[in-house]
Image (cartoon, rainbow, N blue to C red):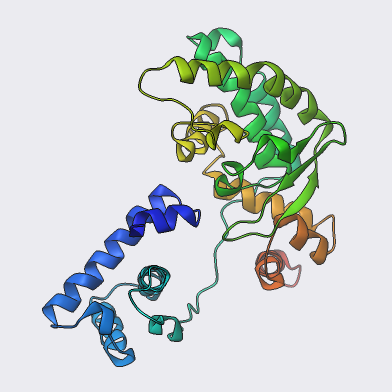
Length: 304
């Protein structure tokens, strides 16, 4: 198993893997110049690399991301038994800046986005395959908007995770999230039923007929089998931007869902629904909301 296969096994996206490669390669180059053996590196030498990165005048957040990539690399070396322990895990850097959420979308805006996307005229899709993919993408968009799923969670869904009779879907655990069972909205049931009975079988058949690609036994069980799973969400967002100019990315949708949930449910319920492993992850959204509210009060307070 190579480093890339290790990360794929642990559900890292292709885009993330490319960024990590850049970080790890820079670290390896530095070690060569410093005549440091990667496998025998010691704590103080890692600190020297961090100082080197800081002296390049890059942000603290960038240094933290680089260090996290190196930690993952050493986790891999432990996994394949090249080294006994990951000493880089002993180093903790804190980013003092607050995470800034994107411009949030209301429940009404999200409903309209789903409705408008679902009702794109058939004639706008130039091929039969494009029509099938659009029906599939309506289902995926529903999971983004109503269950707050992220791309990593969507591509891991299997057909047996869906229970249309009970109107529920099981979300398996992943690198970042806990397993949970979520309720489906009424407007999701028919598109899901149509997808399972008609659209998905046709898409699978088309892919099997394509000489360049055949489904593996594993991907055949996936709810959304695709040649490039990581591209599905990106293409949906690109299409959404053409019909709703307020859309930025899938992160914006995800953050909006959680913030809207926090207005309806208690924090423990939201933690479960979002699949957060730690309550602090959920609190970060609530704290951001309180910070934004405080700013608004400061701006519009009648005594100002």
